[in-house]
Length: 279
Image (cartoon, rainbow, N blue to C red):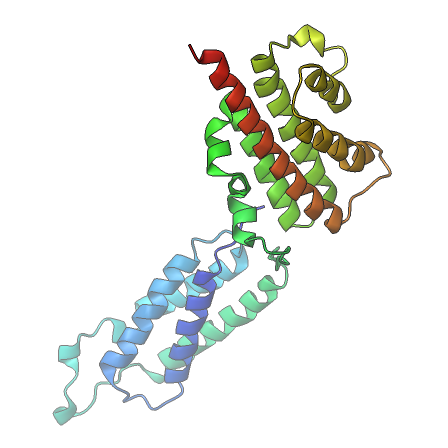
């Protein structure tokens, strides 16, 4: 999913509304004022037509731009305005009508298209910053953990990002899938090399239960192995069943436990690595 930039929609609507209001007053309105209003419309429409989410509205927007470009008042400079000798019409009645109609047509098309485009309001989850969840989910991890991830970093960051986005968009079961891929990647790519565990020790049985036994055998602090076992039994195993689905509370609880576990594992791995390289 990608976030739609709603700013161009707001500004084009604001400027069009202002211009439409000006078109309803007498034609001898201050020339500089209306030219400025039209210029704002033109600039905002140029930005709007770069959006790919509104193909029909883009066509209507281009019609407004075309109407503006051929209007008489856009081709007359301020020097052509002489109040002593009579006011040169700022815009003819027919141009005024054509421009107003093109704006109204655009509003109708945009209103219809807005009802069809896939733009959603994202519900908040506890105290999480929703933009961070959607765009920078790896920041759930501490900066120290991110720096120490080592060879597993690309894979872990990718899965933590997807887990955070899944939480933001209420894809609860997907949260668990990505969290546990990240945890397993850290165990295999970070923990096992530091402990001297060889692929032959776990390749025949590559699952979290087997990994926990190997960690216990190598004397890993039970604060880590107990939490791993809790996550396996409470969250990991259930989502392996095809008929089992998480609810949003499961997802919220699991992501907190998983992030805490990852931080603990990375700190332990770093400590063991430093002992190995110390003279």
